[in-house]
Image (cartoon, rainbow, N blue to C red):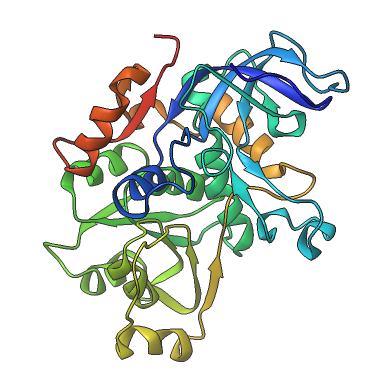
Amino acid sequence: MPVIEKPDEVLLKVKAVGVCGSDISRYSKLGPYISGMTWGHEFSGEVIDTGSEVTNVKKGDRIAGCPALYCGECEYCKKSEFARCEKLTVIGARHPGAYAEYIKLPSENVVKIPDELDYEAAAFVEPSAVVVHGYYHTNLQAGDDVVVVGAGNIGLLSIQWAKVFGARRVIVIDIDDAKLKEAKELGADFTINSLKENPLDVIPAYTDGLGADLVVEAAGSPITSAQVFAYAKKGGGVVFLGIPYADISIERFYFEKIVRSELTIWGSWNAISAPFPGKEWQTTVHFLANGQIRVKPMISHRLSLQKGPQIFEDIYHKKEFFGKVMFFPEN
């Protein structure tokens, strides 16, 4: 049981916590930062107790948790560029995460949620804020065409946020027909299975022959991370939301698209800005609460924490179709 030790800490009862793709990569490829660390960083919960100096929440409040922890001392933190903090970390890495019944956080890391937003949906605030943070980097305008590469959870959120930002047409590329079907249900105008057809042959037909104004790399694949530059129109842009856990080799054809098409490339990291945790969080809470961002169709499994070890194995070995896996520690 965590114990409040600092006056600005908040003790939380975890109500719902999702499995992130980064959790699977750390499980299957990288291993933990610290042996035995409790993982989990996409969560919602209830305030159980607060430190003596906490004023923004009180016992009984319903919250979404921001998992990011910044140092506050480096050059970037001094400029309030918290996503660029030299020592940026998240719970579940070097501090206990939310695959647990209780967790504690600094009070500035808890975001109150309205009654119309249930705990299950509120556990999506963090991954949704990741997408919003990425879009805030870009110059996406109403009427633009967007290509989203990867129809996993970040990709499905990217589709919906592209529409909120005013995209005219959203084209989604993946190699899994089940994921592409879900992409259609959540707002994609066109889908492309890149195992069955070449996106370079199809995208022009969906974008007035020009290519996309913005391409979102949400697959985190070394292959797609090298190909995305060819999907943008001249003068367009590419934003990277996915994390490829391997080296990337870019063929000359794709790399020259950056130069010859005069593309703008944005890297996007985490989901935080100033004032901390950032506009991304309140924006996400608003659009989740009013139903413009739909997350319930993304959930494929609702489980107790006891099922965690087996479900991680099943996800890694692709035993079945997995969308968002959600744990409920109270069960």
